[in-house]
Image 1 (cartoon, rainbow, N blue to C red):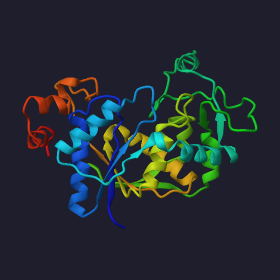
Image 2: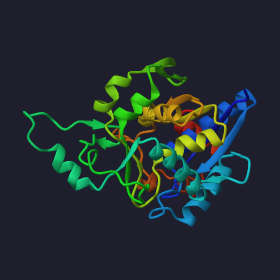
Image 3: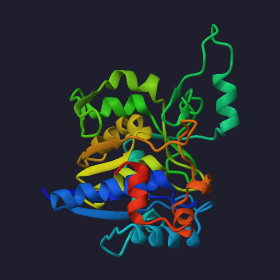
Length: 283
């Protein structure tokens, strides 16, 4: 199978050195194998996405020397596909509507429980299941939807979930299904203001684009078990995963889009070359 990887930024701010490293690494891996490098615009958060930032993504990446097939996949164009996948899970009884906001969840998990500290997962505080037992309407509602993880595991059956990691510590990973309700909780698959979620959309998009290896930062490695679970539930292929190191500042903090001092456009304006950027990120 031909090698296909991708870089999938969100147009919510300027690309920084961390993005440059991820994009260049993915491009280099595709070039080394005679494979394909794809670009995807992850703009499901329309409250923060801006056309100007999307245009800046194309400009910065072209300046770095990256090329990709067009047209570029944009998540905002794929809402019907996400809705169809949600409907499939809903019809199987694996989703339930949730009315809780962040404050409700924080209050629920902060209630005294023998001095136990609130548990955190890939999405932050692990949801305590407040809405899980509420009456389920017949039609799928247009509101936040959560995956009933216990039912999802039952639907998968006894076969183990596995994925191959090709990053800094390559290995074949097996996911302990029995532990997932405690370590993940019932994750959101459709947010009230988006109609989908990162986890659902990224799984469907990777399958549609034929991605054979996902190249992304090590901060997302814990989310991989969610994605492999969804791939099994939706009968989608599981690609390999290459989780790479993160680019950090002098204090060891991961770079954020608000750190304009390390934006690619800032370095460009100061006269840096694409090769300078490669050296800065260790390529």
